[in-house]
Image 1: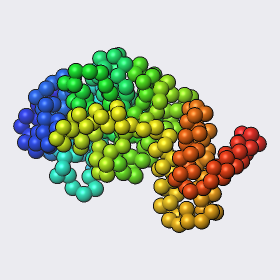
Image 2: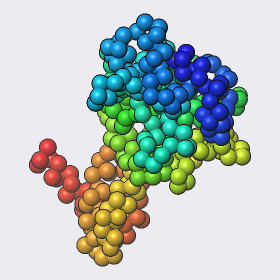
Image 3: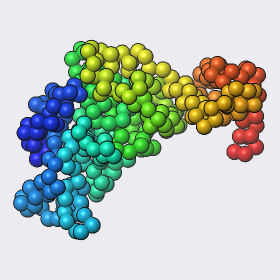
Image 4: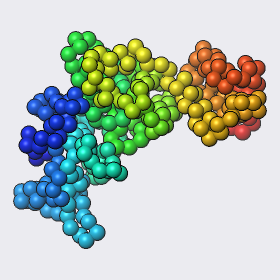
Length: 337
């Protein structure tokens, strides 16, 4: 990380990018976040570490270099803002590399270190080690998509003077069972867990997956979702006037039940596939049958009643239709466990 950190003061583009995203304070600040920059050369880090005595096999094994088809050794991260991924005790075990705004079409926004002997990306969440004080203070955990979103939430509370939310992100992968266990076991999870993803198809799918994993076997607190406008995310909101206050409000005062969002999103996907689905009684009944299993995923009878009413309102079906579909689903589950 020392090498990447040393490149940042000399890289105008990445520094301008971080300032433009409202993260300029991280350029000079060393702790708890040590943001760096991987220069654009093919083998800048590889040559630097090779000169320091590291072998090719050691560099590949550490996930810092990779071999081309021709056998040439090149850097894994090139022309990217780099965020270290730390294990729970604070050791850097991998990196997340973020492409700048000038990246070409088709260039992935984030790339992740390959798995190594000390790094399994499905077993860590970005931001745990750096925010242990907030986690120990039982701040409410927020699940976001990437490191820039984690930093945006961290900054929004850094001068607020009061407890709040603490953001964590999967390391370049979809949420895993192991990561869901980490979230459920955090002290602040008793206050609730909030999902705060991008307002796009990928973000909607991520909310559905988060619901399925976080509710098992049972969440210690309410599962919520904070929703942003189209093409926005926590890091985008940070750049706006009064963005920090708006982000805090969105996360803590405007979050709604995650199960409601899952109902909305599943129905939206059905209608995308069948645009005329809700125009007749048969289609409305089909929509209810597809949604009604969610009633049995509710955390309480009161939540199930609220979700059932939501299904009625969204589909236009009658209350009796939802009740009959719910009983049919229960009978089927009893006969085909």
